[in-house]
Image (cartoon, rainbow, N blue to C red; front, top):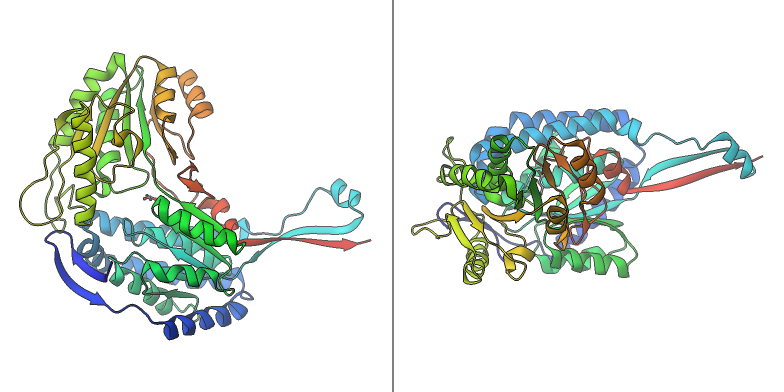
Length: 461
Ligand SMILES: O=CCCC(=O)O
């Protein structure tokens, strides 16, 4: 895939970039290592000042960078600006909390004594240069939620961004540079996927984080495993959205639309499978379908657009194949389902009913605005359907019954259970999944500790 900005609203190639060659990559790896040697000795106070400055710059740039994001991957302009604002918030959150999250831990006195020590503590030290392989769907946010904690912990970052968002990738390097971070703290590598393996094998790279597809995750994890390097993987999701009889069905249907169609449905934590108790199925299906049909689809630069194009032609083709397969298998199309004529990589908000286990869309992630509806006889069946997935990123449940909530929290196989709301990432809460959605956590204290050398310091009597 060429490294290029191609406008998804019309398919026009606006700018192409030459991939960095071996010499340039080597220069950047050397710089990362050299910078780490000194940057690791800086204190939280200094790093927090730099991070706050970067947050201020990003916030001031949000209109311009919003336009770049929308041009490169097609998300509605309002959502692009909101993404920039969310990044600034996370940067400030880590600037405010890193020192406390990574403060020395004091083991219990009885244990210190029992170990024969006069004193003992646990210190969180940085690991070194971390390679981040990141996707295009939230081209700022996915990077910042790695970079803010990693830099606050004293690591340095090397970014391999998706090939369709090169301008955003270069912007990020420039942002940290303008904020005053030492040169080499955060570098963008303009490279194709084929170059990742050698970089990951390089001894100067100490760890890797990847957000993206399962095959990409498998490739990075297997090389990292061979090289005994720490990885965090955030892969796909096919999150359930369960609606029980006690729920506020109108509100659930309204939120379901946003949960499915934000970012044109191209979000790992978008709700994708809507599992509705039979008592409220018809009411939910009617309201949800009506609201999906009413969404404003169009030019992502238009302030009123709710659903823009998908990021690539391949994305549309993949979705068409999934929907066609379901229809051939007997699914009913309640709205959408037809690829429109005309320029741009558009696909309409679509609702499918009567989806079965045999259909591809039941097993695979639909990365676009296509919702599948399931009817559940009771809570047990709802849990069964929800867990009948290789993925386990997050989940959404709608109920006013505390017993239901306890059961869902106990039984849903996912990294999150959002009750009477939709999954949304927040800097203070851990983010990540189980099963084939990956492992490790981003954000919160858990996220910042992933790339730390957790060091026991023991003093003899
Ligand atoms: O694609 C997954 C990330 C979405 C988010 O963190 O809001």
